[in-house]
Length: 245
Image (cartoon, rainbow, N blue to C red; front, side, top):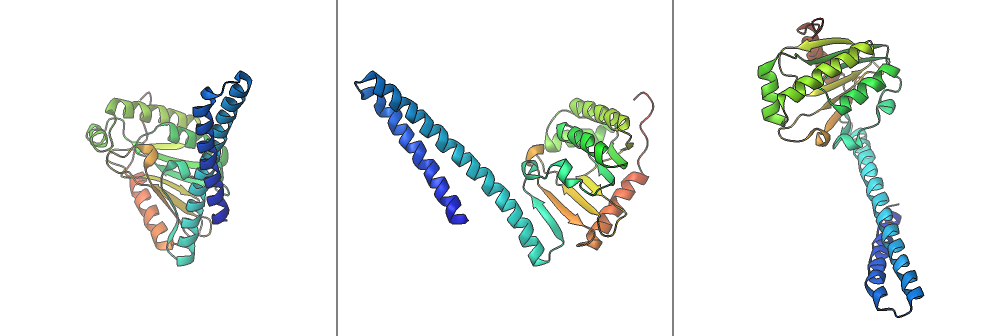
């Protein structure tokens, strides 16, 4: 399989090189008709080669992702999966298969969070969501200094995501303090189907490039238990948003 992938990548590169040669020499061809044919052929070769390289790049990234999870499984490590960034995360619809209850703790909001709320509302019946308190100025200033962005934009995201989640039937609370990493827990009370994914917040690293780790209750009971313990602390020390916030 690796040999085939390598050959396809080489073919893609050769197509591009052949296309570039055609585009360089076609102006020297005296016959106008043949000149047009060679220029069109060059464009096709370059385009076809580029498409092939993109396909191979995507295939390799997904292969590496699957392989890393398989290595973790065979080594018997507690991690169920590691994701380099959001691009390689499973789709919400895939991740939420066989998930009826979801607990969320997200620092603020944004496009990815909004997509999650929409997908979760279609799948799960019982959903909790913890967000940073809108008026937690010190915490939001810390977020802005650490990960970049503007406090006002974060506050707008929190307000909008709270409204969206409440309309979707989520039980929403605000925590007056930092939520260090984004936490998504599925089936928290299930011993066989419980899972959790933690997205690591790293200083100055943009949201789309943040790595994530995934654990399951069945494979890493102690780790999963500690994640639940941390979440319950946040929940018990959070408050419902005031009316008309």
